[in-house]
Length: 566
Picture 1 (cartoon, one colour):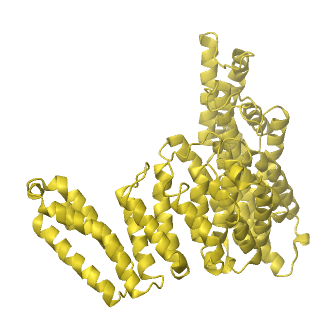
Picture 2 (cartoon, helix red, strand yellow):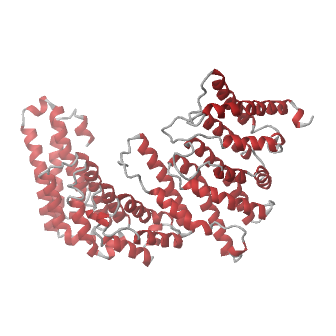
Picture 3 (cartoon, helix red, strand yellow):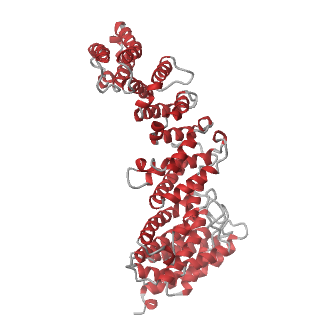
């Protein structure tokens, strides 16, 4: 039985006939205002029938005989025409029936392209459908994949998904070609890839994370293909012999990635907000892309990083938040893509990258008004701590900022909390380098803990600071008598607090009210002691005295879960 006379052939013919019959009524019903809603029952019926018929055709596309769709130019032309029918509007505007029809038509093409077959057959199928020519014609006819709120975003997302799916199939075939195992026509494949890139970039740069996010997987696949391309060149074949190269598109791939990494101006960094959480998830995917690119093209990536930083307005304290945040992100995540691992050790041997770090440390970035810039800079400082060990003159400004109004005493609680944690990490990373600052740091931290400012530190965050004091005393090379003196000074307030509470007759009568304070003092003592791995005799005396105090607390309130947990 010929496919077009089979039961499935008659179903496809019926569906396309219904679409052809009702679509003109839809278009007429939409009028000039783009509402897409019929003025009477017949028009509403046309809306429903056209969209429903296309939806049914989409559901049959994965398994019908390909000749019924791909082999019939009338069907392909109908799909192209319906794809162009999208209405106007962003994600805050309801999709019109014409937009729904466009989405279903695009999905229908995606279903056809996604059918299982060997890569050479898939290339031939994409070429036969001529999907990129049809998309280019749609763009020329007014289907806008570059400007927000011109073509309805639902339709643009569907097209981006189609570009992603077809592109993934083509890159898979191209990778097989690079490995010498693909039977597809190389010239046809290279032509399709060039056509793909011209449509990929507008979607990648689109100012909507749902559209751009739909093609980020394709960008990640391009990075994989680039790695295979680099291997081919390394074997001596040369990229000039290739009919298509990803490397020629790498600068544009990096540039758009950087632009898309920038947060919107109204972004509040409220990660509990659903919309902002989606923004963050999108950028996390871009950071994975960056790591993948760095892995296969570290030198090009470093050159790009340097050019971006050189373009940031000076001084950094007044640079636009979105530009500076995205730039510092590139620096922070650079080592994650460096090979051989560990990337940190490898990248710190690179003089150019070290110069970048030195320039950032010598800037006035700690005076930037936005807390996220400060947190990212401190994260960066902690991650690339070896340069501080080798250039200790860079330390004083960082320590001063972390312990001052740009850190522990910042108005925002998240900044204060993060500063406590990062100060501890920094001290852990370079304890011996901090010997010259140990006394000052201990006195400053202790003063902040005993005399809270207008911006208090949360109890759990204080534990980071107690541990930091312990490390400063126990691991920076301080003399034994100095360790004992400072440790006694820090311990004494907590010992006195415990003794006062235990002496109160109300402690046993109301253990819940007093248990929290006692548990906090025990925690402080415990975290202080973590800094002493092999304590000297003088320090052991002080620590042993605290054991007796802690035992008294447990004996006084043996049933307090909070105390027992400490």
